[in-house]
Amino acid sequence: MSLKQWPASERPREKMLKYGVQTLSNAELLALIIRTGTREGSALSLAEDILAQEQGLASLNSMGPEEFSCIKGIGVATACTLTAAVELGKRIAAAPKQERICVEGPEQIAELFMEQMRSLEKEMFQVVHLNTKNEITSIENVSVGDLNSSSAGPREVFHNAIRRSSSAVALVHNHPSGDPEPSQADILLTTRLVEAGRLLGIRVLDHIIIGDGVFISLKHRSLM
Image 1 (spheres, helix red, strand yellow):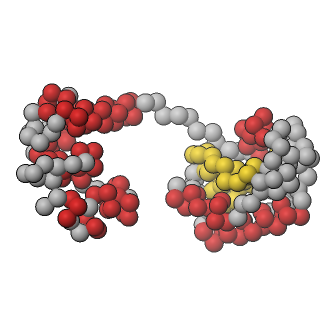
Image 2 (cartoon, helix red, strand yellow):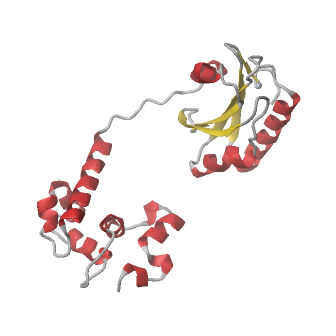
Image 3 (tube, helix red, strand yellow):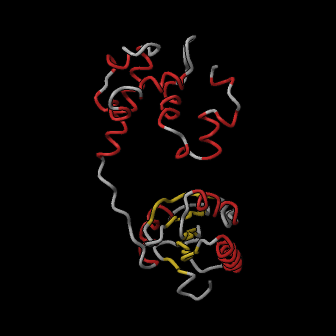
């Protein structure tokens, strides 16, 4: 039976999208790389043949295109794809971990964004994702608006924070006028996002407004 004939809930690709890549077996992960099977068997059965070798999964470390091609049903193109995937895994494992910035105050956040945002002609709203140690794990731009406003609400701010299991977020946006003084709309939006974060279990660490060479922290202003 080909993978297309399997129940949708049992196909590797559908399982990964619904339950996460961690739920897939080694054979299912290999089947996704192999993609297509042969008349004799599916991509999953080919993956099981590869893993049936004496050293199992560890045998992939020492295999190249020639070795993969010796397995019945694995052509040159698939053998090269498998070799590339194994090599990429090795390089990822060997790559030095990037040192993360630990946020201790608004100055650090403002410094990260000042040169990028101080001269923008439109408002840009960015979200800084942090872990339980207040280390920055990622930064995303969630909105670009007109001269005076950007549209950022709970859905835009917390969508990826939930996906990435962020412990906290810091909010950053600029004022094209160069004056970082918060407007009433800024304060109301911050209050709304703090409350939404509280319901979701995600702290809103601060809201930084960037001006031309200056910034304001709403937390230091006791406005959140």
